Length: 303
Ligand code: 13P
Ligand code: SF4
Image 1 (cartoon, rainbow, N blue to C red):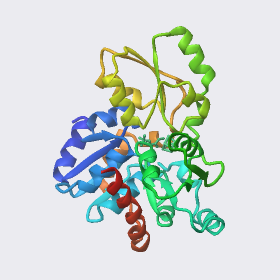
Image 2 (image 1 turned 90 degrees about the vertical axis):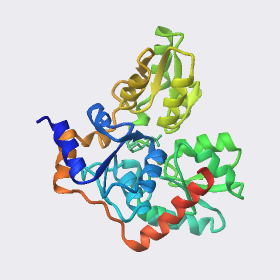
Image 3 (image 1 turned 90 degrees about the horizontal axis):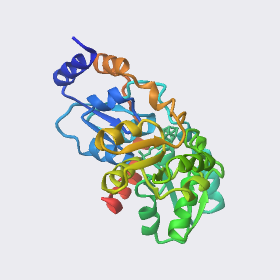
């Protein structure tokens, strides 16, 4: 029996569902019950009723959010090492330090944070809804972390003052994209449309025709009449883009832009995760309660 068949069999026996992020390896995306961006996956996990186990093939903070939003389910992360380095960049102590400096300002945290950090914020957002969340707040200045690029993007879009916490937070994978590389590709493919993730630098965002979350890029590519796209995000998204749009061409803005953390999940590890029911992701009750409030507020605003 192939590994894929074994996974399918176990999944049925154990009443499990597999949720995979858009950056997962192609073979994982192909066997997943649902593939999406961080807001879509959180929503799916929150509303999951049938399954007893949610295998969350992504990185730590996404699985943590699933465990917080649907505490009656067992949430499994196939690789314990799949941790988002950006989420590690904002500690609780750092948030507290900024809160002392600006006690009256709301704290908005990107979901790419650990549950312990979320417990200290007013509301969460994802790259798909950050602008909407900030606009909904009755405040002209906001503390926002940990991604400085997303903070700058939202500041420009909303006209509000966004103070990034920490001042330097970034995604190591999206940092690899350079506008010069896009310029070279545009010379080669002048008809190509450029789409980038807001975690990219200002130069990349300025060079883009469209800026959005991974699933927003999928939607944009599907609806656009263009036939060729230069893609400024982790290479895993190209599998989904090509699958959804077989007649269109997708060119990575930088081929080596791989998130090594996302790629720690493999089909083999996913099989073992299901078989041995590991690694169960749990969040201490007091933290989960507070973090859930911040996540639920986001859903109240963005649906
Ligand atoms: P999306 O929510 O756009 O899928 O982004 C998640 C992420 O980790 C980007 O690096
Ligand atoms: Fe974290 Fe960047 Fe990987 Fe996304 S691509 S999970 S932000 S390291």
